[in-house]
Length: 152
Image (tube, rainbow, N blue to C red; front, top):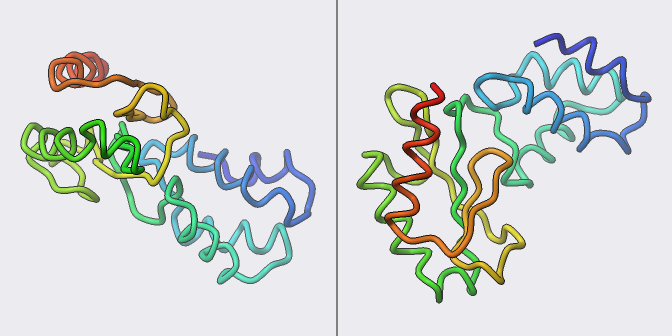
């Protein structure tokens, strides 16, 4: 990942911090923003590292720790919870043999929750990286995981 190339595509304005972080994380095979990159982003935007870390910590879509190739986010909003999100979380924890916040030993999947994915009409919902899925059942989750497992 060429951080300098990504940074050169953006003006040196803190208004672009979110876009820069998205671009960097999406191009990182481990889907995170490493400490050395935080330093470069802060320098490019002329802001403190603490400000960059503050944004990374505030938004659940960002991480400063390595994650799997595929990040699974289960919506834990009230609507999705009423429609069975907790059952899906438990199912995925057993299926992947990890807890929320953990990555599978093969580094293929990381399981996370998100407060709202904006797909309430299709609750319960989840995202795998940038792909959205809704009206989920355990059987559907199995098929989705199988598709991603075949794309190692």
